[in-house]
Picture 1 (cartoon, helix red, strand yellow):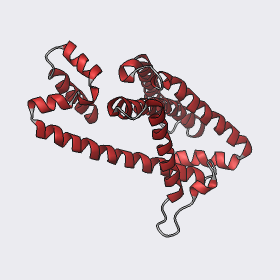
Picture 2: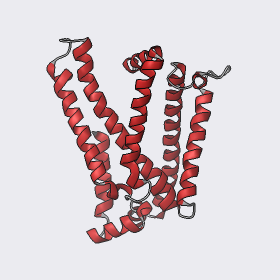
Picture 3: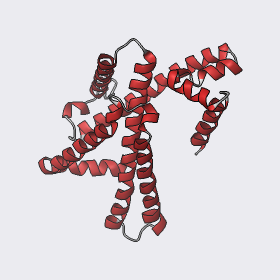
Picture 4: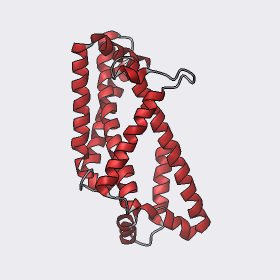
Length: 244
């Protein structure tokens, strides 16, 4: 909640810095990467803009490291449990780190960025790095996360009714998950309905709902296949989820 209020105040400050709504929209469309930076330079000073550049770079690096470590750890855990190839579940003999999963995650990141550079070009960082890689992947990741949370909300109801009937009250075991499910589905609808505003509907942006559907479909098919070909690994997934 605190983070949401911070975003609201920050957005309001940036929007109110422009004389008219037309000026604000023109800046957002023509020079979105400086939408927040230009008012900062105008009202605070050029030193603040330069400082913000540095803070954006360092915080982006920190976020990238966090995402990298999270993805590598998940690949390591899934490899260790037999859901993904076993070699991903090996650790370094000295440092005990998931070094193979980390390298694979690095190669996947290089592959994605390379594909974006090949398709989108490399001559305009704003249109390619900012809107292409950062914004489009953020929208796709947000959509998948909202769908995942919606599915988990239903799973909560099913799990407690099947395994622990009567152990939780109606609000925790039914009402709250239903509210969460409806909220997440509505947010997914708003995201798709306003996709053009978030990053455009051309190219990769216009195919985000389809890509999300394919990713979810592949995961579902793999889960069902794993239940048949390796029931032990499928059962370990359930235990991993419960342990989380």
